[in-house]
Length: 174
Image 1 (cartoon, rainbow, N blue to C red):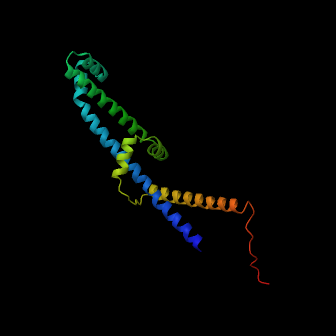
Image 2: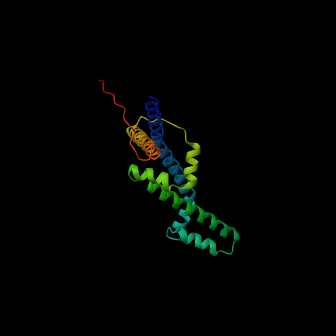
Image 3: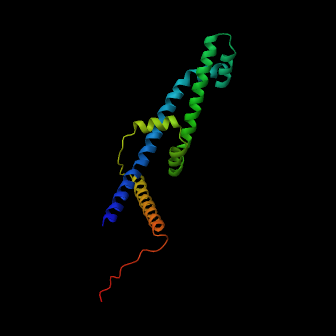
């Protein structure tokens, strides 16, 4: 009986963890989008200058600033270069989050920008979404976790018993 309750608790835990996945992916996507909008706005004035003098080539603008004798322009070249790098990183993150659900999930788990992921986790508020994808994530996580724990206990029992099957008591009524 205790084993049945333990299974239920593990299943419930897996369910609650699983329903968090879509919310976390959504929060990460929103954070990336907000930072991307901010980076684009930060580059807007420089894009206009590059458009007027360098046919829209921001790298040529940065090279021009770096070649200047004025230390202020050289310093600005580093700032613009940093903004460009940040913008490219955020564009790549945004593109990675436009794929199918499994690609987005894998990206957030394994390939997300560490700083953005950490920001997202720090600001994440646990939530229970009743969207179909959250329910699917929850049920799948619960089943997988319950199955993994069951297999782990069976393996431990198999190792302890030395591979011998546990004797089954005879329950027939003679």
